[in-house]
Amino acid sequence: MASQGYRRAFVVAALAFGAAAFDTGAAHAATPWLPKDTSPLPDFMQRVARASAIADPLERCLRMPDPPGTHWNAAGVAAYCRYHALPTMTPARFQQLIAQGKGATVDREFAGYLRAQMNDPAYAGRLDHAMYAVGFHDASEKTRAAIDAWKRQRPDSPFALAASGMQYRAEAERGGARSDGTTDEPWHTATSPVAKARADFDRAATMTPSIPSIYADMFLLGAMTRDTTYAQDASRRGLTMQPANLSLRLLQASVASGEWEGNRESQKQQRAGAMEIADRFPLMWVVIGRLSIAIDKEDDKGAPRDGKPLFDLSEVPPASDLGHLAAWGRLAGDGDAAMILAVEALRFDSGQEDALEVIGAVGRHNGYAEWSKAALKRAAAEHPGADDVARVSAKWLREF
Image (cartoon, rainbow, N blue to C red):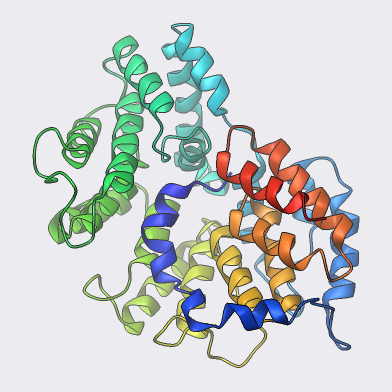
């Protein structure tokens, strides 16, 4: 499932492929989106269909084609496939274990994810993804209650404190923390979610084992409340602990605008820094992919400007970015590009909601309705309990 927490806060703003730039009525009038005579879509979808028949999620991801004409770094693609495809604790299992009083079991499993993230360059985002997948970044009363019970069972668990801070950060975002430094409740009061998140993160940062995943949330808290010092300190500490911190580097790439280090030169510096360690930490190619979109394809309003096909991306970007580009293509009336980009987003994250919207709208009309229906059904099956995924999938399946 695509975690909504980080993406809502800044990725949408930083990759503002916005509907405001287009007359959406004109885009809908362009349906059906039949492939153009010289389109690469038919050949691409033939290869997609062959890969889609593979049952194993990791092998399926690895066998999927890259966008036509691109040559993404193979190690980066493989690492990103592993990042999404390898199983981690589900929300249901987390809830069950805590309800059974087995907080120690939860700690042991997260400790295993941490060891993989810190000791194996190919799994540099293992713990980060596990914390997304279990739902800590999506504000929920049920998740909040389970985390509180975990803290009571394991009061000295840095994992429980990290999860608590992440949940408070998500609650602050949902409840009104804004980039002008204000919230519905002043963020600096002791009872505000922002203050509670900072307290949990600050305590977790002093505990053993150290949790690198907290620094992305701390950076985001600083950005949400315009506390530049706090954000910069979180960035420094996080990259000192783990130079290949995927979540933190992706957030830095997203907020490289305005006073947040925002200019093309700073984006290029970030990309160069990621490239310096990408051979050792292949997930850094995903960071390079995000920055390359901003540097090579965006104009000052966030719209593609390089004159090349929308799917001509130099390196593999995050699934959320692929989904946003797919939505941009749909609104611009380029159904072929939208379909290709949506398929790529779902390759990595079968619950990427922007991509599901695109294949629902475009896939009904371009000759790939059966593949699109199967993808919508797979999303619902692979992301039980994800309300947004269920809603989008059900909406479009009714239209086929």
